Length: 371
Image (cartoon, rainbow, N blue to C red; front, side, top):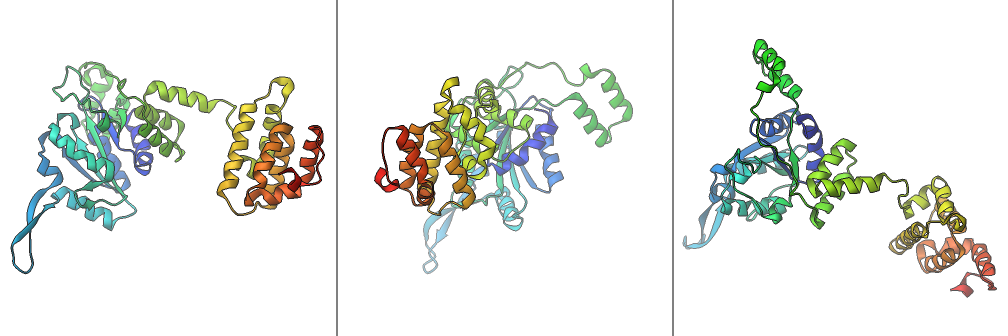
């Protein structure tokens, strides 16, 4: 992911509460890109190099609590470090902005330091101090290649909390950055003419260790519900569940035969009518699995809603019941009649049940006799 795409993705990651993990070679803009994002959007950024930290630097140091009457020590209490105090106060004073904690050099941290990072990721908490919703944690590290002396982090429980982003900025992004920072024009021109001089060749790496889990699929769901641009969604999904799983997911989502939900039927059935009729056509094979999905969705909707359907919703539901195979329609009508939400609709269209019953060789006088 290049710098611009990363800065495009970060607002969605923050809103979805998915911590970003930037993985890349030194000097590719992991820290600087985050600093630019924070400055451009008015967020507060605090960078901590975990490779130089001890446990007390992250969670603070303990102090004695004294009995107000006797002055005797009665307990201990951890006092939060200065970085935490700054972020906490900023988040409380600026609820429309974010306080971002950037944990740099994650895989150069001592293992005991890594352990105390967990509460920050899981609960946005240090001991009894809980950070507001607009507090965001992200991290960065170099790849585990022979180019770097790093700790081999194999703790899946820790890594599974992050969206792993391989930082690969384009050369043009660097030239643009250099001009904005006032680099000597001749130097910029030299690097443009000989781009191979921009950075020494380093060992290639990938993010093949990223694998799907229940937690990471939940993060994908939160992220996709925010409707990010597709190129951003693909990169982020791959960083959460891995490239193979992400590719399979987007392939499935792009297929035309997407399940039709209860909301689709009730709010805009004419839009889906031809598909339902196609799924119900036994001559062409049909898709009874898709009809069953929609029927189950309608039943679940009726069970969880007490308010009667509107006139338009009732009309749409009746059309759906007429269009699907009679056996499935009969079963669904019986279930929907038991629910307060849809009972009036079934009563209003009792002729549907009569038609179904006649085709089944039955004689009915009304809905109640069919229950």
